[in-house]
Image (cartoon, rainbow, N blue to C red; front, side):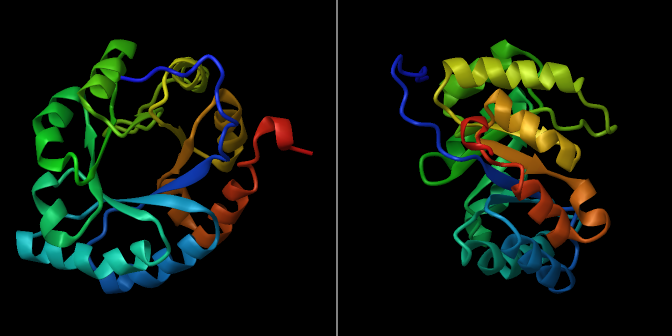
Length: 217
């Protein structure tokens, strides 16, 4: 696991990481997704799949892959490691260290392996040592609970200061984007709140807060 060099290169501008709602019908979602991707600098899309049979899930992913990948973004599956290669996705996001360690060999080195649901600094470091391409901090758990925002900022600042592996900070609203960038997040994840009204407008607003503190007016 690489740590930050003492004389670091200039920090790249942070980018957005878009999390979809659970998707059952690709055709019904594709237009909204395309508009959302056009509204800001989205580096990756985490596709959450609604329940369905394996063939339906694969077809859904295949239908949405070009919408995402043709814009230069990566399409990641939320779990479903067994479908990644077959459906043409770029990788998977795993929740928790156990799920991650059980999936890493099926993804690496060809595909992206990311992790969230990290309960401690030790878990984050263990995942990085195992080959995680990024770590995510601050996302809600299945019940909707998440750490305090101050705790999320602290964890991101610690990670950004010490490690080279990118970190994703989860923003529960557009107001959290700039503080996450200031803390050191390489990517800012936008979740369900984006899709509640006008997704493109929400993403454009979030993107306006991505400027690095040293370059902000």
